[in-house]
Image 1 (cartoon, helix red, strand yellow):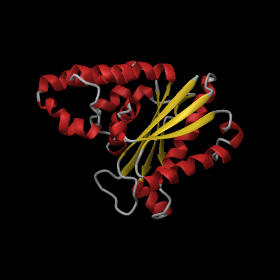
Image 2 (cartoon, rainbow, N blue to C red):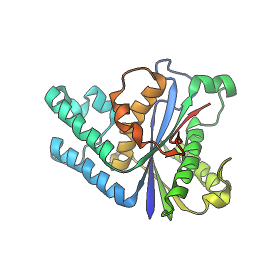
Image 3 (spheres, rainbow, N blue to C red):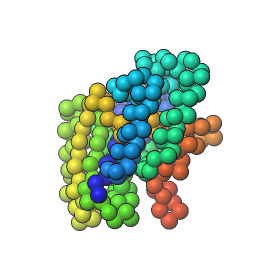
Length: 243
């Protein structure tokens, strides 16, 4: 069986400045089998056809929240209510695991300083490590394709090199032999390529980040998807907060 890991982010990964209202960088991974992805992909396309009559719309969390661009239709509260019902059904009814990593930027800077290393790489290392934990349990995985949204040629090359190093030498908890059990491929896609897996990851990332920043706040979206986190022995391995 082939699995996909769709990765998207919420928040700014830079350390030069920290937004006090959003001091977290969160990288969200959606781990899903090839068969299950066919289902969630079809469900996403059906929503686009229902509300816009075509499959070209890109489901983007910020645009949805702000009712920007194609999502101006959500100013109609009846349409908005039904749209959220439909989206939440896609996010809750399909079979996938959330494996994400959050960097508390203020705590990180206090402990490590403003390192040149990209916190994106650090977060992705945690995600890949825990993805291997999960795949070892599944036992039917032969290959994994990590799909990441393009950020720029320089950034993508740097990240690709980082992933290739992880595949060769492993991580602190996953040695190279364990990593090499799987054929792991990296793919970088432009947002305009309209990949529904990346869009699902984007929709999940924001409410998770908000839950970390405001743990006591009302967060209906988070409550809808909290059972999707990868868990092992009763512990939620699908969310790593660092440091």
